[in-house]
Amino acid sequence: MKNTATPSQRSTKQKTAIITYLRSVKTHPTAEMVYLALKKKMPQLSLGTVYRNLDAYAQEGKSLLFEVKGQQRFDGDVSPHSHFACDACGGVQDLWFALPLPKVKKHLSHGASVRSIDVLIKGQCDTCNVR
Amino acid sequence: MKNTATPSQRSTKQKTAIITYLRSVKTHPTAEMVYLALKKKMPQLSLGTVYRNLDAYAQEGKSLLFEVKGQQRFDGDVSPHSHFACDACGGVQDLWFALPLPKVKKHLSHGASVRSIDVLIKGQCDTCNVR
DNA sequence: TTCATAGTGATAACTATTATCAATAATATA
DNA sequence: TATATTATTGATAATAGTTATCACTATGAA
Image (cartoon, rainbow over all chains, first blue to last red; front, side, top):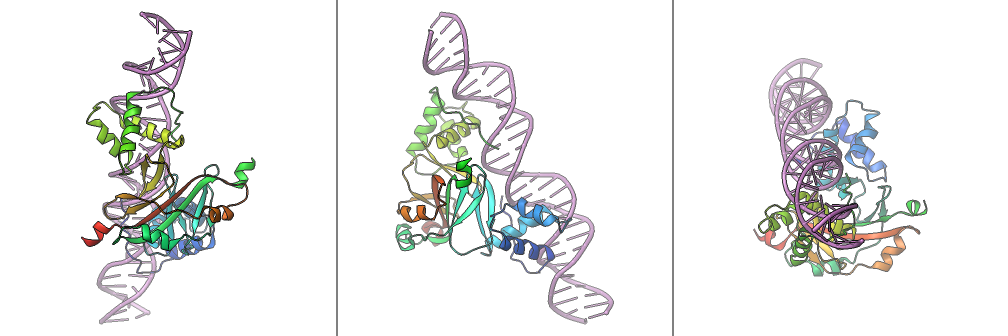
């Protein structure tokens, strides 16, 4: 159930390609999307390698990981922001409103620690709404 | 991939038991948790029936559905609120701070429509932190 | 009561993800 | 630079959560 992602120690072509790609797009891709995109240039790339490294980057805080419709989505931009996911086309967009963090903390149990705050708004995007 | 949940037309013992149970707990159970709890009184209950109905209730807006660690969690309380999920024990708690809705709407694309807003804070709960 | 059909139970199928492991390649060291 | 060590990869099998299928059951209308 858990990917036992070890902190990365050696740099490889695969790792570089994966993080570079993730940071170059704003599509919030799934592991398979990253895999398919990179496979064009690295035909022997393995899907397992993509999962392994995306997962590791997320654990190291070098990427964001959240779930939409039972699938993991990754984001190379780790600055705090929210996401909008379209039910129809499956696309995910960034939202940059600020959360009332002091208010949020007040509501947490005393002694609880926060690792991440994921805000996911679901609905229908403007493009899908006009169709 | 999609559960073709039809809007409920007939009332059955199973449906009643499922929604009654979901509304009686604050544990944000998975489908299997609901199944195991109800199975004690309804031994022939099927896991598929639980999934089918929990999913249908969520689509009808009679329950909340969100995902934690790749698993669906259900909440019988549909009034707007957020959730805290503990990485260690897997428990989920309600959080009742208010979101800055006007600000949120301003950041959405014009023409986009919102179905749900899921706020999921992940971390370690107070109990797991002291251990 | 009878009838049409929505819903259930049992189980198979599916899909995303994780685990396994022999082969490969990155780095430290001689 | 050559060699040794071992982290990482690629290929693939295994897993788990969820969804689909379908014969049978039971609800609710007539």
